[in-house]
Amino acid sequence: MPDFTLIYFNARGTAEPIRWMFTYADIPFSDERIEREDWPERKSSIPGGKLPVLMVDEKPLPQSQAIARYVAREAGLLPEDNLEAAYCDALVDTIRDVMEKVYGKMMSEEDEDERKRWFVEEFFPYHMAPVLARLNARLSGQEWFVGEQVTWADFMIAHAFGEIHSHHPDVFEDYSAVTEHIEKVRELPAIKDWIENRPETSH
Ligand SMILES: N[C@@H](CCC(=O)N[C@@H](CS)C(=O)NCC(=O)O)C(=O)O
Image (cartoon, rainbow, N blue to C red; front, side, top):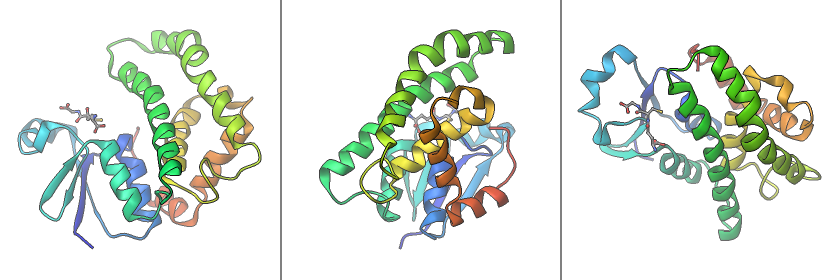
């Protein structure tokens, strides 16, 4: 097994589901967290100048989604069946489309009132509700999103929607299967333990 160091900010963000995968499979990794004030100095030493980066022995692997897929395979969270693996990719891409809008808004200069207006009037009805409805229906009669086993798609979805749920639980009221799924992933013993003991951060 290579030596793994996951480098990210002191935040959950796009690194958190990757941390979950390492933890779930009990794969040792260093969880290196760069403080914002140290970032300007560190940025030039990071290949590509963006985080997260996974150091695999001495070699850097950039891009959160590529890292997540790689770690998922190491962790046994990627289906062997090619089509099932592609369904995982499709679900993860769907969630990424949704989350990119959220992260884009979080980075904007707009004030809290404008962000709330945007969430309620633009983002939720047109971008999130259709995805929630589709995913909720997909879960009816099955435990996990793809196949019979938990996969990295479950981790990526439960993490992303879990973040939105923590700020806007009301919008999940009509989507109980998705809400239960978030809880189920968070209740997996290793994940539960990680969440209880991880560093406290705002996002
Ligand atoms: N597509 C990349 C985006 C990487 C990215 O933009 N990372 C942000 C943090 S989430 C970052 O490094 N921001 C600091 C900077 O650009 O200087 C990924 O998914 O890893």
